[in-house]
Image 1 (cartoon, rainbow, N blue to C red):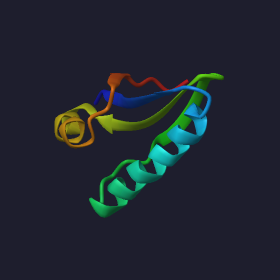
Image 2 (tube, rainbow, N blue to C red):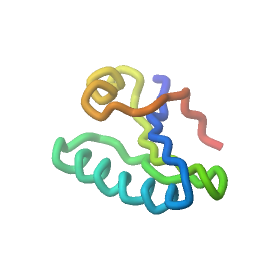
Image 3 (cartoon, helix red, strand yellow):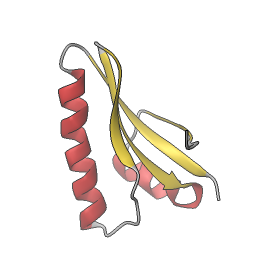
Image 4 (cartoon, rainbow, N blue to C red):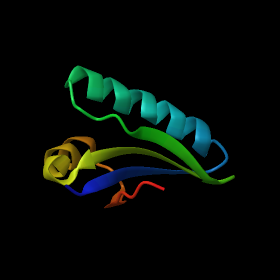
Length: 79
């Protein structure tokens, strides 16, 4: 099954801290809803751009997308 990475973008000098804080809320949502999501994280793309993300099965994407409103998504590939 294909996995999708749901992404929230944060920009500006505080982007990393904001992404880290957003990830706390994403993890709380996952715990509250008892979701089987184990891949989450923050990536710093530059000094002014960081992302928070979760990785979900494609079959579970639509309700999570509608509830959590990510800025974008992409096919997830393990590196």
